[in-house]
Length: 164
Ligand code: HEC
View 1 (cartoon, rainbow, N blue to C red):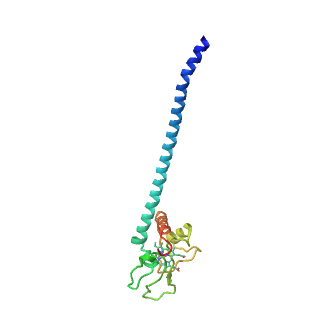
View 2 (cartoon, helix red, strand yellow):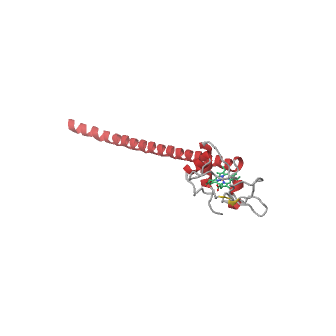
View 3 (cartoon, protein in one colour):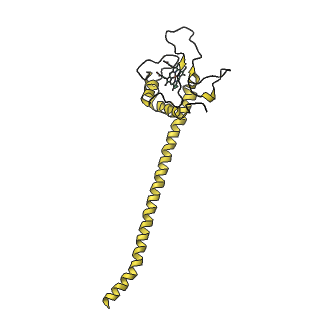
């Protein structure tokens, strides 16, 4: 009789125990989902900051340092050719007083495939080429901040490397 009573109690307890398990599972799923939503949000916010760098890089390249003036070919009217943006160009200016060193071509920068980030640091922060060579005019010797150099590289890597 006592055992029977205990059994009945156990039967009664079982559904509530499984209810608890169900609640725990639901909670666990909830936590995992919340965590993954949070990590997606984190990812997209870090993407957003990378996009910020690209935007700043574009501004520096196009409006401050004017890299595009020399590194983009020109059309017959002498205007920068937007369809070949930063794809390398012959230099169109000559010095008033002849100089012993004057580069005749500006290399392609679109996609920035020919240079590593370390090269970019040397070129844009110290004024040296990838092999330690002094860069010839009319390319400027820049002493940019590291942050600005990285923003420029981020932008250049985002530019399509061939004509669309
Ligand atoms: C007034 C013209 C001019 C402007 C402005 C200019 N460049 Fe250049 N750039 C050149 C020329 C010319 C060369 C080739 C130099 C040489 O052959 O020594 C060059 C070379 C380079 C190189 C290759 C360096 C090497 O040693 O291989 C990189 C990278 C580069 N420029 C990036 C930039 C960036 C980024 C900007 C803007 C922040 C910029 N340039 C602005 C004319 C210019």
